[in-house]
Length: 271
Image (cartoon, rainbow, N blue to C red; front, side, top):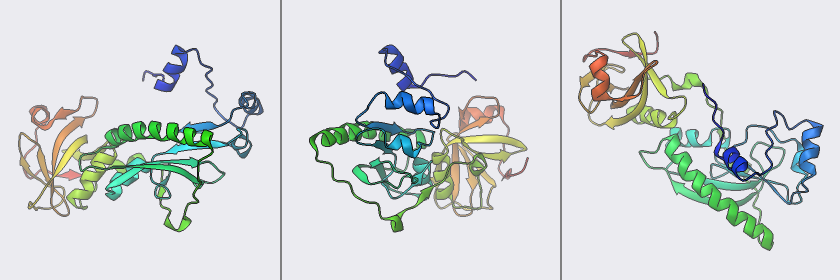
């Protein structure tokens, strides 16, 4: 797998900006390097390392996190995916003051956006990235003007967005069609929802609900140019873009040219 520098790193290199990529933030040398900047504020976005308490206290105004949910709903590592899985119709960005807890700090600013029936994690991520950039600029301006008004989170309203596990992406056909469609959307672009069809693992990149169609869960009901119709616990799902292992994702019409399927075949959870 070829490693690609993140857009942040690419911009830093292009502008000759100082760039640090510590494996851990617990190192005294790393903490001293950051302390030497005497920063007014530190901003964190989708950062994979835990910030020690000593680091949170270094900047004059502390550390701010651009969190991809409307806190206190969906604290944790996978707020975008969990919002889609839950069927939420809106989400947003919360700029929060970081503390020692898991996304428990005071809220400084919120911006919301809708979640459409067609949003995947990728499309929603992209919307929230733009919203987050706007929100942090607005927050920093208010901070400079001394106009920020921190709001404490109501812990009783908190929900938790646990980290994704690849095994979650295996489709459970006993669920209803809407739930499975949400899973397809939530696990795109990673780890991608999948099923076992005719003894082979097949990933599902895109699907839609077909109303008023019933059958035994996991059974292929029809093969159409638009997709493969599979019965769910309630309703049916049209599999529109599919991918075999070590192959490209293809629209259903192309996929079935190289993968023979017939009505009555079954999707299962076992190879």
